[in-house]
Image (tube, rainbow, N blue to C red; front, side):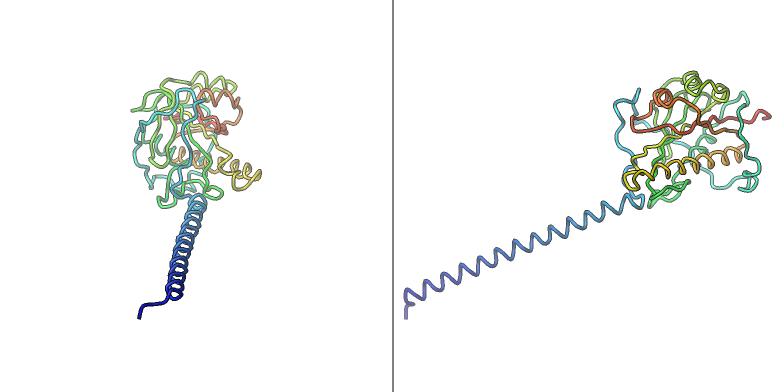
Length: 272
């Protein structure tokens, strides 16, 4: 028997309601999946910086930096993890040295000094030789090279992740750095000078104004590492904090958000 007109209308209405519910349910399911995915991505974004993961520690070069940063990386020799001097002996011998022998450094010595300041010691989270609040690593190390075997004179920026040097300025800056640091004699005779700078925002983003205190602590940790490493290599260095910030920043071609904190001229001991 053929269905009546009323039965046809009822069946059509039921069919439309069923299709409508299926569409709504499908939309809700897709929406829920999107919410879960966004939440997961948000957690990853928060987790990586906190643990020092593979988030780049610095952005592109500032246009205000004279000379800029080249893409060429000068690879450094792998750092040694064993040496002839114990930690106790290095501590006992540490002195501020302001005069150096008239001799160049080797690239192996420079490599070891840079590694001691900010080298990577744990690859998974990018942990370094010096402790850092929140593993945020606000420090950046530059080196003004005057006489280092295998390197031409100029200013280089240390890249801890690749343990290499980025050329910033392809010329000697010894005289300019000497004047910027109030004509301190140690800078006039050193074959190389390390400059420790900081991007304060990397730390203050998380810790507020107190983060500035943490950065000052951290640069002290790194500088002491360099002092002890220098002694272990038979070298001398001194920590210098008296200089004109703007002049040092311009002389070394630092980026606009980097503030110089220490200069550390280094060289062979005069007796060598």
